[in-house]
Length: 547
Image 1 (tube, helix red, strand yellow):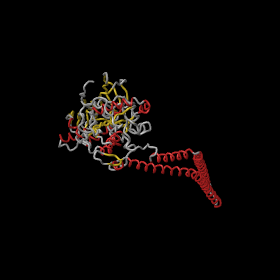
Image 2 (tube, rainbow, N blue to C red):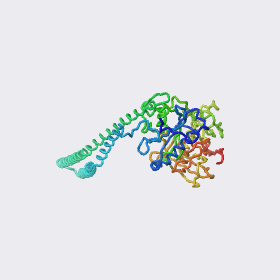
Image 3 (cartoon, rainbow, N blue to C red):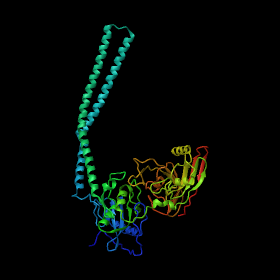
């Protein structure tokens, strides 16, 4: 029986060699068969006029090239999340678990949680509750004013008595009268204070009656939501090539997250692999691409390929790929292709080093070889070496390395107070219209897709970049960047984001299009020598080709 989810290529593929290993999903160059499958999926999407408005907002899609038991080569397609308020569409594989089924437990419990939301909203907007809040606020204001006036009168009367005692000798009877007067006024103030406390307590009780019920409903909502999520995660029983099955709770339990994030298991990649395993199809290669406009915070470009996300998919795919021969992570051995660093300047306090592209600044989890390790190996007698700042692995250029703790602290302070001047040069995809300007997009980590950064106007840290166009070609722009802050991926995001230059750096695998390298180079650096106080400037030209 024909599987309607398995599509066969319209074009001949006999001349395209099959991959030796399955795609490493977190860092890959799409296989030619994936590119061909993607073109066919994109043609299909372009013809779905009914989805045009939703697709325009942007969505991630994926393709999985497979081999059937009969040896036929085809592909599967999937989308992340839901499409047109449904998880089921004829062209695409089904979800691992359809939480949108009308008769499913999720929709039923979601309806109950929705009713709680309505009850909470009704209480918050209730006229009696709003009147109770107003009455309580007015009562507090009146009480404060009355007690403030009474206390001022009390102090004024005390001042009169003190003045009377100081101006003349008083008889015992007069002294006693003043004492009685003082005691009476204090008692009156206490009675007034108690009166207002009683009125405030009554007003507060009326408010707390509503707030206690609102709090109870919110706690019930939180409890039911957590229980629903846990029950839902257990329905996502993921498979791998070895025939093993684990639910999402089991897969995320060993991670630092411990609990699966919302939407886990609903991305395109897990859907594709799950369907292939269920149908006895052999996965050969996979790719994911973005279709539509970029989200406000993230950087996604229409039609571009992207790796699987780390936060939602890393634990899932690590399990689902077991039993397949998977390509090695190219980042784990990327140092082998990097050129040797060049020592530009050295004295007793510091080093200025020209770092090649493809070398980490400091040791990392996946690629332990780094500039710092290289320097330590070349200088075994140097007991102290401190990386003052860093460059991305893919970025080349000048870095400062301190040879003493004192020099390190001095140079760090210069970076903190922004007295270090840096100039980067980069080739950008496309044409930048303005000759110069400034970019001020605040940045924050994308915790569900590390190491990507996102623009976050609410929680992001300030980031400032000045730029100046050096020259333009038909398709690219050579530009100089002058960063005033040093946020992670600052130049890459400021270049690529639609609210920035909307022109990714050439070769940017995270925010643009992969190439032979990232065309970003830290060309010059100016700083004050920590010992002599002399202002120093160093420069190393890039070795970029012309575009």
